[in-house]
Amino acid sequence: MDLELIKEAVLTVLKKVEKVDVKSLPPEERKAYRKHRHEVRRVIIIGNYIIVALITIIAITVIICSVNSGKKGDSPEKAANAKPTPTVITTPTATPEPTPTAAPYAAKSTDTTKSLSSEIDSQYAIMINPATGKIIAEKNAYEKMYPASMIKVLTILTAANNLTPEDLDKPATISQEATDWSFSNGCSTAGFTTGESITVRDLFYGTILPSGGDAAAELAIYVAGSTDAFVELMNKEVEKLGLDETTHITNMIGIHDENHYSTAYDMAIIMQAALDNDICKPVLTAHTYNTTFSEINPEGLLMSNWFLRRIEDRDFGGTIEGGKTGYTDEARFCAVSSEVTDGGKNYIVVTAKGSSNWTVIEDHAALYNMFREKTENKLEESDTE
Image (cartoon, rainbow, N blue to C red; front, side):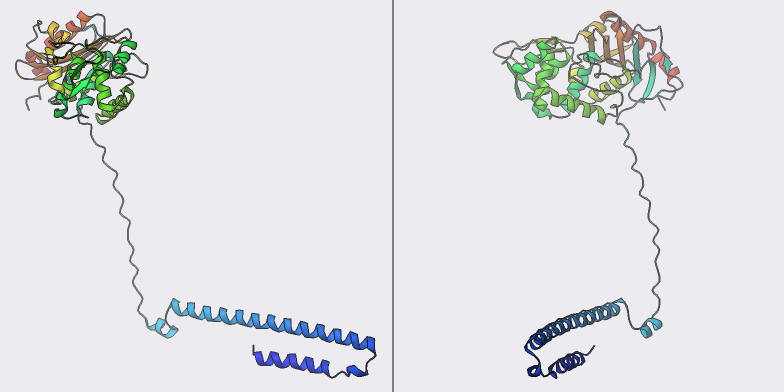
């Protein structure tokens, strides 16, 4: 639209209105006429503004459309002469699924694995060869059972993996918290006294040899700040070993709890890992140990491993390297041990829910005798391959 044409149309209307001779009109008509003329002018002015606004909007819209069309491409002539750009189709590369991390320790049954029954007294048992990863014999090895104090092997393994060898000779003071925890849970004791200053190393030996609840509790507090925090570390250790589906820990000493359980197989794997640990192995294989001298115990405390002292008199063609027993009313009599045969082979045996302390000894001796080197070669023909 042309603004000049609009203005001309407006002026024409106004001129027509002006042609009326106002003076010749009667007073009432003159007043009405003037009012009418005022209204007409007001309507014309408003209409003028609206028309200008519409023209402005239309002009802006046309400009924007022209700019956008220019951005979209060249002129039709150029577009007709332009060479088409080839389309590259990329085939998405499938992301490979992560390979599950294998557990660091494992043992498997073979065609020669013997299923045990009445040969031993214990309800649960397993014998493995750590070097070959073979299960030599088993009895309910994968069934849920209560490990009692055998779990203290995991306790020192967890502590060792959260400390350094230099930490072993650092001072540790037996706290009231550790003493009360051990006493309230009816634990066996290493013999330490509240306020006694010893070393971290003493706590390791006190946990295993006399199966001291006081030593285990103080070791847990020293490492993690509290017994509960330490139990969390133990379950993380179980997960690292790939045993978290069949082992769960609620305390560090083996107090009975429906949610505190393991299997004979899992305990054998835990023992294997602990014997491979430079901090744990000397503890598990010690027959006796004398703690640091203190003001309360000027000569220290002499500790001994009951299992190792009892089984060493048995004849089974080898040497018992290390061991740990356990007992609760629900778990009954348990033990985990390791033997090195006269021929240099290594075995780990776990038994659980035996009828007495002595039948546990007999079960371990029987298994080591049953599969001593003269017969194991028939069962493990590939051992020397």
